[in-house]
Length: 294
Image (cartoon, rainbow, N blue to C red; front, side, top):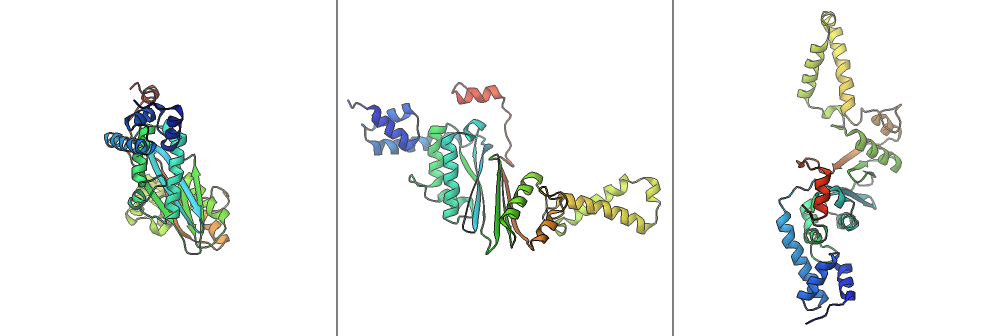
């Protein structure tokens, strides 16, 4: 019978991130061999991941990485807010963002197939992490920008909203400021020309229906000016260039760009769990799950 030392368990825990009992079991099953025990843990993690693949993972983190004229955002999901704050999960998230940036990866499937530093692919590493975390982990979305000679601004709000803004010119301060604006205001469109014609037509119809009979009786050209003014205000509220700039409410975002002769090349905004139908679960049930009592 092989006697497993505390030092062996400690070393395997440091290498794998798995729990103490799982590490001890892996060492016992593999006669104290660290390498084969590590492989056993990884395979065990993959099996657990398959069982959890149908579960909803709508929590998690948005992480970013930026260097040398390029930047990336990655959304990585888990099942609970507890795990979203876990040190091993956060380390995994930051590693994924670095991989995406370093390898110039612009689509999620390529990122999942990319090599992970500890061996295997990113997707395999995500599955192996389940052995430690005990929840479904999903590397879900990716945004990548690399403007030729442009300026990049990035902003992450509480790990839940991430924005990348690429400008043709302008300062890094302006680019980051606009990224903060996009995070806060979430404009639907970039400029007025991007607003669909059917939206404008519908808003005109609504504006007309809300007018008093007295206003409706005014000459057609005056009536058109009133409605046009209402529509212009609505459009400015839903377009990035038309919105009042949150860092300087005396100007619009478009005006702030003009001051530095800058133009927006692209805007990327990711929100944790966006588009995922999240199951309602009370706080007590979440605690029970984390304690292994559910």
